[in-house]
Every structure is written in structure tokens, then in C-alpha cells.
Image 1 (cartoon, rainbow, N blue to C red):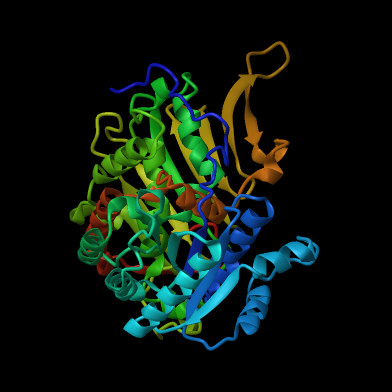
Image 2 (cartoon, rainbow, N blue to C red):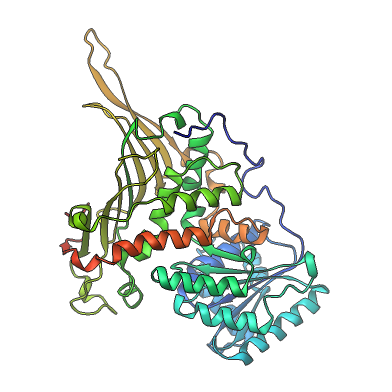
Length: 475
């Protein structure tokens, strides 16, 4: 049994402790007119700008096939971001938009990349020096290979300032569609770019409450000695959403819940809960242990598959726009799986996620062994981020009667709560500083797909159960 002997050293300073490189930086967003850019990327960049967490000299270049003049593009972006009235000073929004440019083009046309290169050169000339380049693929995964290929062929990913500058590529999940496609895409990425240039986004890793799991485990010595099969009976990881597919039928029906959140968010939560202590709190050590843990998840036994898996779909799903009639795509899953390590010998891990459920919540429950009185440790990832522990105390009075109590920590009680960055703010900030801790590595992606593919190989044998919207679970 591996037990950590002393708290791991932390990097001092907290969030935004690393100084932003003052080299001018250009953000190039492929698919800038899409939902992700409007809902997450641009608002996060605006907030980083307002709070002075971007380089002093920067520019944002949107790339899409739509036709805009620069002023039309700025107006579109202003509306696209859906800024809450009064959230920012009008002057700040105006100055932010002054940093935005637009390049019309097609993802599969060499001339479009030549035009983009000319645009970036003009911006560099305006900076009077070479700039760092951050390419963000906010597009459907089917476009990844095409864009990456043309980026590489065009020379756009070659830094223009020697060792002082850099170019980086941000890729959104899902990364691949199964083991084979993930391996093929990753192989191509490795041929085109160095691993230090590749930032594979799983924004869940950037959530403050999820990061806190490592601090809680490895810097509170009272817990790590209990973190094993001798003391823990089961672990339940839940990611529930009150909303349905919300107009994403065309995308979601080809993916389903297991690929959409199981292959990434759920397994990353599992990795942080179950991984061995990293040698240090740095990207290499943490990503190495996450990958190692995911590779140890046991493939589901095909003989007991129906006992270990529940597969469900909410009532009315097949009538949603973009969904095939009589669709067999799952909107809910529940898996019982195990980890092939001594630490977790025979401990069941229940992985559960669903749409159109009774409430939106993401949490991890650790059930400690006990008879009729069981201690439960809960990590609440969202909403109401925090940690709570259920324990037992004596009821006041003459008798020896016990009663359960809960000890809680809530982020919202902290004076610094309003300063917590949005997950995408953290993702973008870390991509600028080059910190890959919160981004998935090649080994993690391939290990996750190996496990998920083992489930998918027998997925159609699992009966699809229909559950009512607003259910707490699917039986």
C-alpha cells in the first residue's frame, strides 16, 4: 500500500501566481461564430482582459467562413458574447473589441491559411516584434485533422522568434470517437507538433473544486492513510444535468452520454480521486499519475455486463430536433467498475451521468466502511462547490445515543469566492503560461478510450431504459 508520508509542496501564490509572458500574443479562434466561442471563449478572454491577466499587447483573430467587415464582426461579437448589462464598463468592452480582427476563410482551402498568415504578419508589424500564437479549434471534431494539417503545411505553427516565442494548439473534447480514431488523430498530432505545443482541453479539470481534491488528499495527512480498500467501501461519481440536449440533437445523437462526458469528465474525476501521490505538484508528475490510474481501470466483464451497466434515454428524446426517430442513443448511463491496483482491491466505483434529471449537480461521494453508521465524504464540484463530511456524535443527554452531523466547507463562504476564475479563464490563462497540468496528455486520452471502447463493444446488448424527465436516476 502506498501512503504519502508528508504533504506535497505547493507552488506559492495561488491563482495567477505565474507572471504572464509580456511577449505580444495573438489568439486565433477557428469557428469564432460558433456557440463555444460566444458562450465561453470570448467572455473568458474579456474577463481576463478587464482583470489585466492578458499580455499588454494582444490581438484576437476570428476565422470562419461567414463574410464580415471588421466593424460588422465587432458588432457581431458584442452580441455573440451576451454580456450582462452593467457587468463591465462600456469603455472596457470597447477597448477589448478594438483588439479583434476577422479573417474569412474555409478550413480546407490553402489560400485561406495564406491570407491568415498575411493577417498575422500585419499584426506582428504593428507590434514591432514577433508575437506568440495560440490557435484554438472551437469547431466540430470532424474538422480537427483538416485544420491541423493545413496549419502545419502553411508554416503557421512555426514560432517566428526562435526560443523566445511559441505557437500552441488548443483542441476541444471529444478527442476521437473510439480507441482507433483517437490513436490515429493523436499519431497525426505527434507528427505535426511537439507535445509541448498541444493543449487538449477538458475544461472540467480546470474547475477549482476538482483541483482541490489533490490538495485535500495530499496535504491533509489524516485522510491519505485511509484512502484504500481497507477503509473505503465504495466510490460514487455523479454528473447530472437538469437540461436535456438543448438544441444539440445533430451532434449529441451521434455521440451519446458515455462519449460526451464519460470518456473525459467522469474518468478525470475518477483519476483525481484514485491516483497515487505524484512526485511533485507539476504537470509532468500529475499527468503521469492520472494516466497510470486510468490505464488500471478494469474492462467490464462481458458475462456480467447487464448487471454492471444501466443505459437510459429520457422520455421524448427521439422527438428532439436533429435526433433520429427511434434513436438508441443513451442520455444516461451508470457503470460499476473496478481498478486493478492493490490500493483499490475489490472497491466498486460507480460512474453515473444523465440529462433531463431532477437537478444539475456534479459530486463525488466516498463511502467509508461501517455497519449502520457510515462516514461519507463528499466533494461537490458544482453547483455550491465545497466539501462535506458526515460523521456521528453523541446526542446530548444521559443515554449513549448517537446522531449524524455534517461538517462543511463551502467556497462561497470564502472572501475570495468572487475571485474564482471560470474554468475557461483558467484554461486560456494556463495555455498562455504553458502550464499543461489541467490539460489531458496523450497517455490519458488513449487509456480513457481503451476503457470506454471496451464498454462500447457490447453497448448495444444493454437494454435501453426510458426514464421520465426530472427523474433522480434511471433504474
